[in-house]
Length: 190
Length: 198
Image (cartoon, rainbow over all chains, first blue to last red; front, side, top):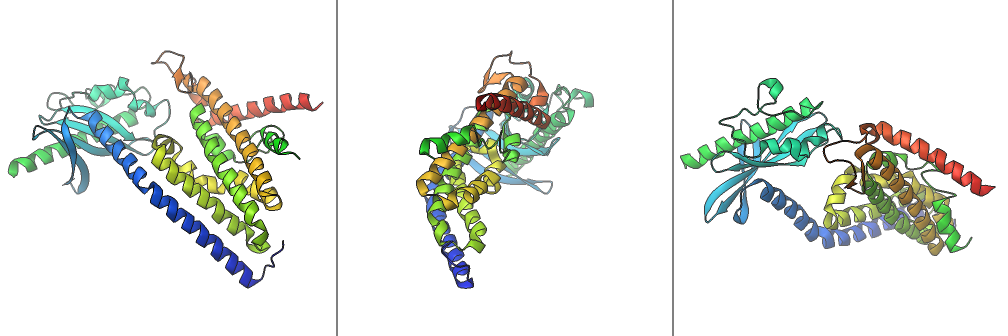
């Protein structure tokens, strides 16, 4: 090594390495900031579009506090009338939170659901994203049927060997239904 | 050693996964499917080539006693750059690999090559070395992912060859499968390369 490990050299060297590296990072951050935002936004828009009826315009973001917890939701409208709500809901599954985007129609029926993120066991709980299970929530009317797995006296067939995940999914959807009720009460009282 | 040999030695003789057994954490964790394994391999390849080049370029002006912190900062910078780029342009892959991208910083392959090769060789040689080792890593992870995907999910690169509603052998997608497949692949790799050596 050509350079001596004196105190001055070490300080100088580390200082300049850090300085150059942070300058480089700042440049890359500035360049990628916009694409990252667009990518995140696209993801949200896509998951909203997947769970609510056809709409025009841009989903309006809002939040509401139900039993001391804040929930994010998006209102979509067609011809100026709100036609659906996409509600971000979550419940604790077998190995972490199961985050679900639940779409509600203006009539209070679940239109569709989409799992935003989950970390359930592959091949077991992770099957909750598959249509065989998730499609049960399509056009699910909470006024007629019960949002629980059959074992608990509900109308949802649980995934084999993954009752905990199935329950979590039901809880998440039920939470969204409750949030929807709170939203519609708010709208009426206005 | 010629440039070409520098690249090929990473594929076979010094294959990071099957021969050096380095970087086992991402190897075992991210290879649930061929495409995941390949993405992880390519991400590491990117960091490895750039950090090898940068370290080879600055090695002479870094005092010996602080070389490790300096290398780590350089490697971490490239990993963060990669992270930004993936978030921006391949968000789907970024989401699957998740935590393992920032963990490339502490992947012993990257620091290992910096210490063992890049700090005493030229920039070009170090780039070739990084490319070779990176390709070796990518190849191993892809094979490992492919085997686990075929056995565990019954598909090849997300193309399913068994009926939609049936499953593969679940164990191979989970952690124990990773260890088993890796062990058998190492045995196979040793057998094939040993024959060549005679």
